[in-house]
Image 1 (tube, rainbow, N blue to C red):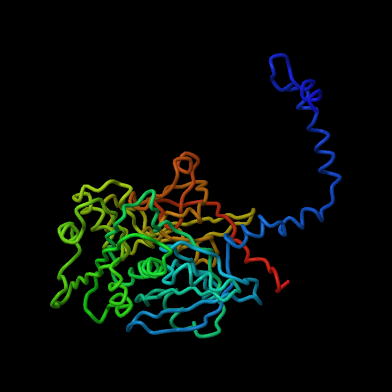
Image 2: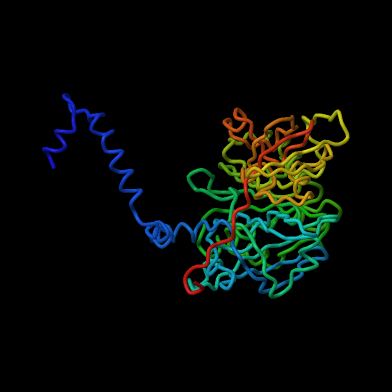
Length: 420
């Protein structure tokens, strides 16, 4: 072995380029002569099986339970559906979400929903008995939330993504105390954090400022009160439309945060409606926190782009979007204040979608021609995307006719284990 190594080296100890290049044809010949069966069995390698369990792409689940939380919010319990190829749930970190895919009127639509359960509940006893829980608030005019409320019942089969998102706690990055700001159903990811804290999965102190209009809008109230007894969690209710003894009134401001925050360093985690994010993005700098100590959940769709500080008006009233994929093309119409993603879905074209707020990059598509308005508050593209002409359709608004190339929607999980 030593003599061969010496022969392949040039004087001075460097690897001989000529010897290295002579290896290429020999290796290509061996690859060409190998059996395809070896490649097909690669999925059974332990490391590949583990990767598929952690990152399955999509998961096929069933509804096991439905609970009404408030007049417009329901809690859905999802379990694996082995018959459809998902034997166990993918693990996740508290604060992450799953993108739910639904079919309506021949169209594939998707929306992200935060996981309200804990990672420990998803793991179960390791026998495929884990659960996910998501809270879905019915939004007036919301296609997906309305479809879910009207059609999801015990036994309904659903398709969701693997867990995604970075609304997570990391002790090397975040402070030992977190001031959580929840608006309405934005309490959902905090429930996951709280459950994990109580089960020992996470270790930080949480001061939760929960903003709602009225007391009747609170969800998970009894759980929050019980969790507060642990000493690791404090819950402060903030009512915007009424006054209650022992609670705050109005809105969550820097002054209110200072009132309850510790004297030492702390992180701020916020989850709520778009209007709350816009307010906090303008107000939180007054706290003087380091940038790494402020985290927002996936912000979801912008409901009114005209409210964005850098809004750019359009010249036209409607634009054409030509969508290409794998050589095929289709043209749809799009209103200037409608996202490219919404127009594509309305046209019956399925596109990969995760956060729908420009962060995850799952819908990352190439802008072949045309111009878009992309709000600075939602432009999560990498620098390379900007240089090479890629956009996130979920937060892009047409300002001319467009031609774009979109990626394919990933196939469902392969059938494994006992279901093969």
